[in-house]
Amino acid sequence: MSTIALLFFPFAMAFAASSDLLTMRISNKLVLLLLGGFALTAVAIGLPLELVAMHVACALLVLVAGFAFFAMRWIGGGDAKLAAATTLWLGFGLALPYLVYAALLGGALTLAILALRQLPLTPFLARFAWLERLHDRKAGVPYGVALAAAGLLTYSNSAIFERLAS
Image (cartoon, rainbow, N blue to C red):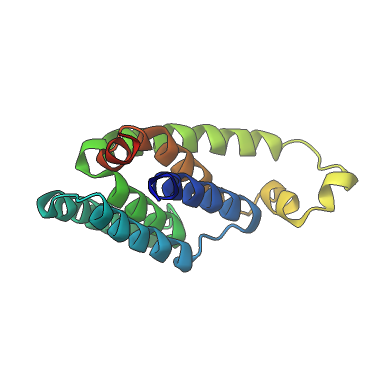
């Protein structure tokens, strides 16, 4: 059972990244699954209520900031919710490293996509709708890929991972 709990977050992050890359959407169901998975895991490992409250407060703070960025059209709504759900698992202690990783990876991803958009899309690659969408200069950047990768980079330092791995 602990192996399933240990791998739940990485699989959810991988699904979020692939979903955003392929469809430019992060499902509300996935975000709710992350919330429920956190609640079940926190109970299963006996995470102290004070620590759970701090994780929730961190996630709410990131959600408020994320929706402010969404209102300014800097990020998508799914990105804001994914960042909040991810910080729920990581807490305040890892929120800053997570957000720094997300910013750096997101910047690199954006630059790579912008560079690729300068190249012609071959007819073979144009058959794939998700590649055509990524190549479209009017389309956004699937920032959920960077958010998920940043979550994976920080997860092994989280209180949840440490308790599950021991």
